Length: 71
Image (cartoon, rainbow, N blue to C red; front, side, top):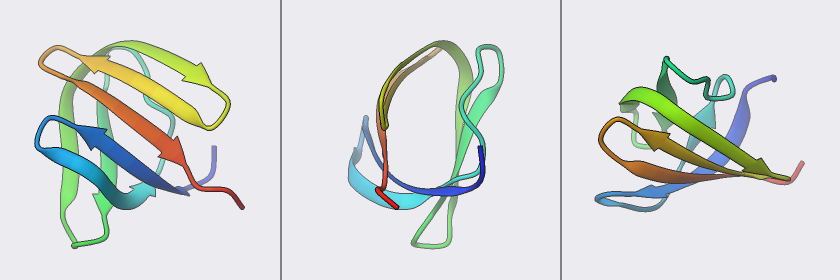
């Protein structure tokens, strides 16, 4: 996957914009570069479900929904 614009929601995040560099993989932390200049890095991913442009990512501590932007 090439870097893609995305919107992420989760604990203390409500439709935050950023860039996802790679698809999330079980065992690795998920990382996104947020538009405010911060790097978001989660605890290790436990499960990933994908439905089209939307990922539901369960980590050791939280659940996130990531929606990839349309081209």
